[in-house]
Image (tube, rainbow over all chains, first blue to last red; front, top):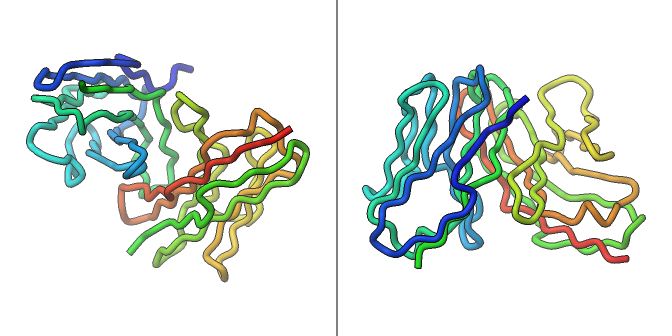
Length: 116
Length: 113
């Protein structure tokens, strides 16, 4: 079975450019998470969708970040304009029914972003 | 407040030795507990999970973990470590009323020959 699929795997971009990260969750899952991982802050939840609706975006660092989930099989995380401090690994993860029911979160391989 | 503590930032063990990684959690009700492993350049892979029932759970790659409610702990163990086990290990807790995972800060495991 295909897991969570993320693209691009690696991206290097210049400061000020727009970055779009993409995610395809596991088929049948109805919850999707975007995480950011850095050495300094570890794993941070940026935003969580349930049934394509954003439920909790309190972790989105600022207005430069936006996330969408137009349908059950696709989500994007956009950074515009990008800054060097946005350099991190961005993980997409999905789950069925959400954590509250005890179901497991499955992670993608991550998108490694470097902003120069 | 919900939280997860992994007190050991880095552990070094010899290949073939036993391993125990510590995890303590703070949660007001019965938690759902997880261990994930992250190899360099990779995503997080689920090792094992505890939802209910037997407090000793078996996972992949020969790992096991024991839930101890009295100690609020969910320590990960392996009787004999292999060089390929070198990775970052994350403990996580999820509850029944929220939709968030709470991750520990991770323990980095080095395996020496």
